Image (cartoon, rainbow, N blue to C red; front, side):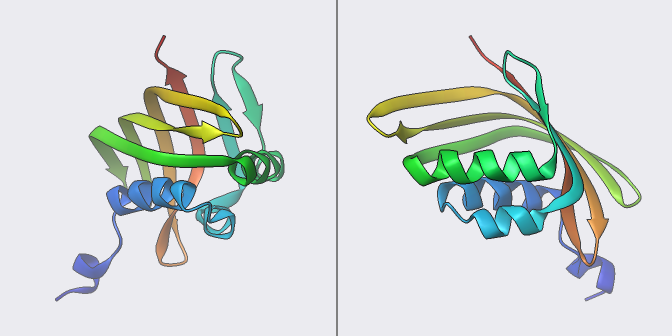
Amino acid sequence: MTEESMRPTPRSAIVAWWQAMQEKDVDAIERMTLDDYISSEGPGGRTLGKHEFMEEARLFLGAAEIEDWSVSGLEVRTHGDVAVCSYVWDEQGSQGSEEFDFGGVATDVLVFEGGRWRHQAHHVSTFG
């Protein structure tokens, strides 16, 4: 087995991200993001740096239960140590007493650093 064949893949990084969300593993999410991470999401087009994103993740996941999630149609374009990943995502769960069912198209930019793929940017366009 070559070193290249043992290298983690952008696909595995995307799955690990969503699994960490479901498991409320904020520390893992923080390790997966670069310091200059950018998140643009939702109808408001909000853009957050890593610090603000992590604060919101802690608040959301502290009161939320992601019961199910899926990623489909994952397309990966790798350019050396940078990968652009586009996919359809869906998640269901609850936050407090309110149920949610989110879904849309996501685009993630990953950078291979320190032996793993880390999230540089995340953008979602929601359905509906």
